[in-house]
Length: 309
Image (tube, rainbow, N blue to C red; front, side, top):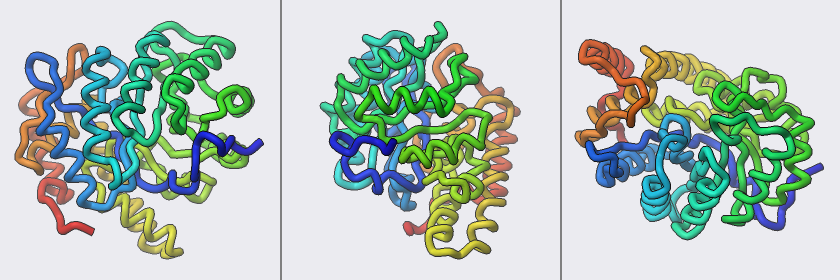
């Protein structure tokens, strides 16, 4: 069954490099708007196709309603008419996710995405009901977020088929589950499947995926854009070379188990705007670890802004 086209518009535009950007916070927990705008502008200047805002690296799951609303507003303002903005609205409760969905719609974001309910494991039935209410709250293209490592529930192909029948806004998904082989099944269903690992863009493209959503593309957008463009042009040698670079960048972002702080540190050094630390209780870098991250980022050429593509 192909995805419904009445509410999700031109599905062919949903492809490419969509960084899962971090969210900079001030010490009082408010959104650091200048820093967040600097991150988005940095990536836009390097040719990314869109953003996945307030996701895992963006700390969306532990934001309050006001923080999500602010992120949606800024994302919509910066991206509208330039690149596609997918706002993550997943939250512990359906009501909170619906508020975020309406904020994304009202702010001009192009789509919403939603992880299954956090903390309490959903059944297939309650997940479908959750997705129906959240999708209806915005009535925008809707992307599922398959993240069983955090939600205790994997959206396997038979469940995705049920969601597709019940949620007409369903356009695609971010596939961050370990079962890589399911990517092909989602593509066969007519869904726009982004791989959720920065290490796997090229393999995902060969397997029916249409792009990547992850934190590493944010700190090295030129690497991922060149990889994707090379694939589109049939230049496999260049795509393979950039795939090797992508693996090195992903290893850096995952170092110390502090991905959110790692990317904020790198962005801060590159843009000259302090992006702060993650919200509690997210893990943070120690000073010596921060020095390691910056040294490795320098080696990989991530600290100097490049000429726009």
